[in-house]
Image (cartoon, rainbow, N blue to C red; front, side, top):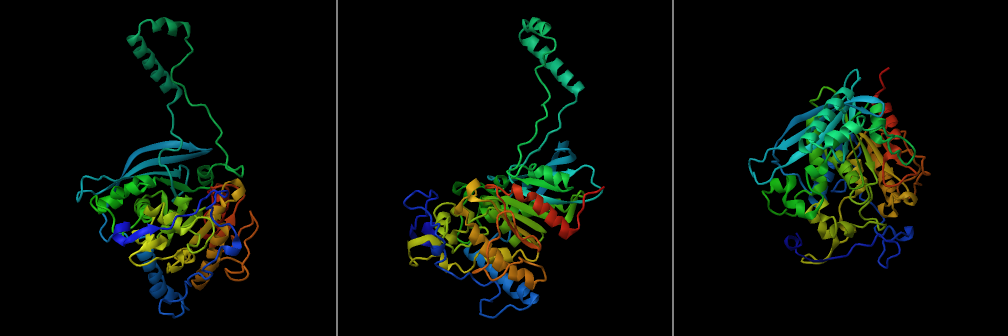
Length: 468
């Protein structure tokens, strides 16, 4: 990719180790070398966006085009179709809530290049006692049955009898052992175990969702596209490119994961247990970036919970605090379009570029979600949500994006001042009154302590209540 772009050298990214000589900057007085964020309400020709019509018809398409050209890459016009099939259905218990779990595989048509096979893995879980379709949160992470239903006591007896018979057949001397220990069984039911609680002492996210009458879908991003540079010639990107390396404007992993979420949504809207108008997307860390990117580009998603996303997510790219653009261009470059590497170049045929040259920033990415329900979540450094993620910068971007929500008739953040002067609220005291929400919990690198707030906040806006 560097050869394609004419890049001879990249600037090294800073160290996340605060004791290292080349550690990242954590001095707020040095954090804004490019103090002004791009204005989401100013057209490329300098005109001002003053109406919702101007946003939808002119400005939003401009921002999308710039993000595709310079940051995340373009999804090709012709991407193979996906055919979903239910591979198994299980009746499970999520906490104390009976649920129906469906394991699904989305087979991507690879007839154009059979050497690469892509099978998207998703598990859909919905409350068994729901009176109708329920809102569903698609969660980036490992898919699979969350609480497999085990055989009954009688079935275990049959399994153990068969096991013992087979063992005696292999070793007749075991017949005496079994006779001396008649109560012992080789296969036992899994004893009930209380789950590991969230950092705030709450139940796991999936338990909370099920108990609140929500469904959730576990979507495995790695089944769409590998999370490494070597995987660029495999997965959905490799399939579309027929095993060849990317071109500079091609999509990176973040857009590929978002594309996979879109294909998951294609299935979910056909499932009668799902409220098709109220499907959301969630992720933490790199998957927090992917969740925000998904929401920004695919307007069918109704809500998003963005957990600890950092650079490439809710944190401004031009901020010099913690993780840097150079951390991405010289590290996880495969998340982004190849062209994004230009902004980390120190020596190239085009000279050099800096983060200040990027024509868009995260305030505009968040603005692309407007006026849909958008919840930006972080933890605290003391518990592991490192300074590296630049919580302050993400708050600044969220504050500025709020103007677009207001323009489109949705309440944004209830703050005083603009992004230069607005003060972050105290930990555990977020802004949750509008369709754009911000909350920093007192846990670590997770969105789990904010899940109950997200559920209550969303239910208020969509009118969802737990059936009595």
